[in-house]
Length: 478
Image 1 (cartoon, rainbow, N blue to C red):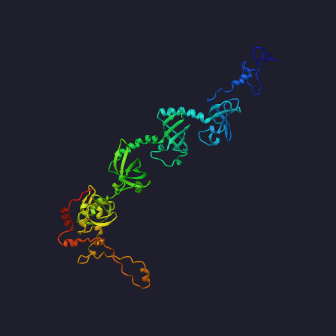
Image 2: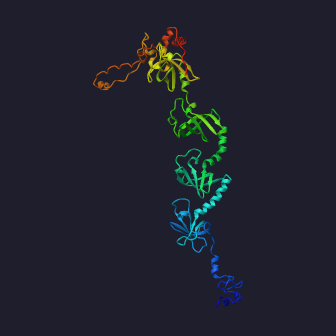
């Protein structure tokens, strides 16, 4: 029987009776052929989705294997998404990315490979969608966020629908040395560079942090005044100083402000993590920079020396450096004074090395203290004439160290017993008396006067030294 005969020639026959109680429709006629004249093969083809390579299609996950996922997109066969095309992350388990019956988008890589399979890519569909979104966000100067999925050379990779590169220098407000703890964390960043042709997206978390903290920084800087004393923590140490976190911003302590003493490298004074007390020197609002000082919160050794010493006193020091015009002598911690060549000896001296050598220890007399300029003038020549020793030497060279005739007899002390003394004592032998320590003053032929002796003579040694200084050539200060 032909198709036309089966359908009555002109159309499909109509049943004149309702269907029974078996659940068929009873409110209208039922036709035997509802294709409307369309052939069965055409009707089947009409149900198949039409697409081309590069199109984005939507489907439902129907199977998850260890190396691929099958997606039903309404095609004559399921599409295959290889595991490498599931995510921008490397070496992932497909079951961690998708679930059964999940609807998702995929990009058609090829409608039919050599095995006749439809190959799809989920990550490339996300990539295409993400580019449109990211370009819009950058135009609006917005924020993107995503988890850190990998540490690479020079920075981090974020999953923002595609691989976004976050340079190490832009991860935080200050340089981060260890990036590994950021893996897995979701970070918010600004887009600073976008190039689709090169598949290049560069992010900056520092820009985001600076933007969000600008208001707080402005308030912090406005309230910070020069002269204030603040507590902070050393956040980093560099060749030119150390940065200190004040609890809102970092300030710089320049190497010259770390200590009153000469500093070879900042790491010799502070380490990262040290809690310090600093003074605010300057606040630069336009440049958002804070200058700090560590030494300003410490005792000034020059002030301390000037307070504890007077012109005319004798102090013991060590020669640190020779220069054509004299020698520098260290007379205290971080304190150096100049012995001008004219004050090195009673006779004419052509060169300082004729009188002293670096490292030599000797007595010198203070002939001038200029605290404002931080300069001390010393004299070896006047020290040889004698005088009153400074207070820190009184225990050894005070009045108790001299007999009634003014002869030096040494300090009252108990010397350490020489080797073998304990053994001899154990055998009942008396230990030999220890020799008194050598007196550098007497060894140099310097006559030491006690304050009492000077007063008895009717004039202090300070006055005598001042008269000698007036008569001598004035030393050149450096």
